[in-house]
Image (cartoon, rainbow over all chains, first blue to last red; front, side):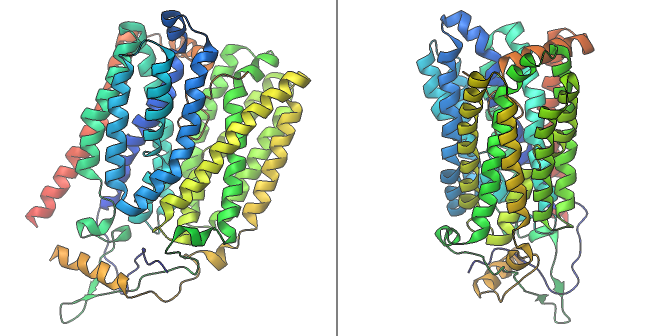
Length: 450
Length: 67
């Protein structure tokens, strides 16, 4: 049994601003840089085609390898995070990513791009994904875990919205090499110092407690501790979780999530063109989706700290299914607006909900590996769906069947998520007797502050 | 053959270059600012965030030390 979470007896005192929120802010920025700079890759494609005299398909090889590498890296970096803590994994990952990003400025062919972007940067960026950042957050937060996770995920989203335009304008003014050097330098000069200065893998590293609570002091001046909440399915070794139902239910949902997000991501432009939607409308609808998306993820995260997470997760998949149905039944331009509004509410919300629920069910000791496992399922589902949707469009000349399949898988994911017996498995609802190791852990935290 | 995953993905896949072209035209149309000004504005946002966080953490730690 694991015993990673702490709850304290007595009347906890609250600090004004819990230090965990600074950790969230630092991880927000790291995600912002990592995701933003990887998304920025698309901005350079046409320039590389002209400079190197290669086709889009050649450059696509680097992007496709990068996608898979990023997926396969997640259980590995998650495992390393579980073993060594989030801080070293995050710092090393960002350092490798920074140096490789700067090195991209030196390359002059697709082979270099495949090596640096497809393998090195994509693998390293897996170290700044929810498989690592989510673990750190889960160790700092218990009661507000969903909220903290959703703020973090919103950071990654903001990275795309700010860094992609930034890189685009740097490309226009100074060339692509300067853009890559600036990106790597931002991570080296700001991201790494920020992580080193602010982030600690867990609150006890700073003599603090989960959620910022403090032990009450008894009349003898001794800290009144300690009840460590442990869930019935908390595992010491990640392999133990493979034999339990919730991991597969969550991973199935996330697999479907990958199918539906990746297929839309890749086929969005081709679908819009096939429906005769103007570029201006598509761009505006995309902007609306992004805005609703940011709000949606924050609302879902906050609600999940008050309600059963599996209900919200199921609802998110069902709402997304509705968005897919709207692509089939709503005509013309209206379809893209319907999708932007309905789909926007559900797009990123699965991330904090799935990560938080995994932590609630299995504890945080093996969270990196287990959530990395789900993330890998997400990427595999996405890669398969991109090919299948493309094949369907080529054969049928329409995305309707593919979207119908997407809606059906989402319906299944919604039902499977709703069938998770959260009240039976989650530490939020069921707690079992802790082991003695937990007392030592929290006691040392108290001592550290004396 | 599909080309690039876009900004809609959960993870950090590259944005679709065509989608970005559409978006950049729209952004330019709405804002009407030169690339140089936008670099300064966006750069300021990117650089100031970590600096503000580090300053807040420093003040917080200073406060704890003085207690």
